[in-house]
Image (spheres, rainbow, N blue to C red):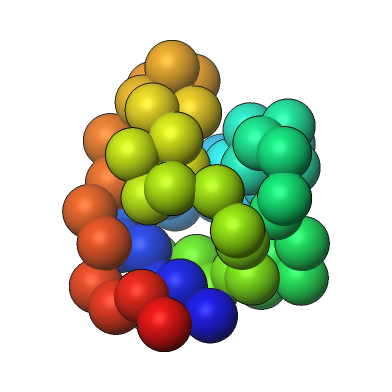
Length: 68
């Protein structure tokens, strides 16, 4: 599981945009978005750089908190 910090997420629309962006990355599944902590947990075989790029492309810069 990978956990990302997405500090600019604040609403349902943000959650949908983040989920859609991460879903478009091959090898990504089980996406859970927590607006309270502004974190996303997901299972992915994609490199972290691909996940961060997908989020950056839709206007949500992110950082990796943990990756397993």
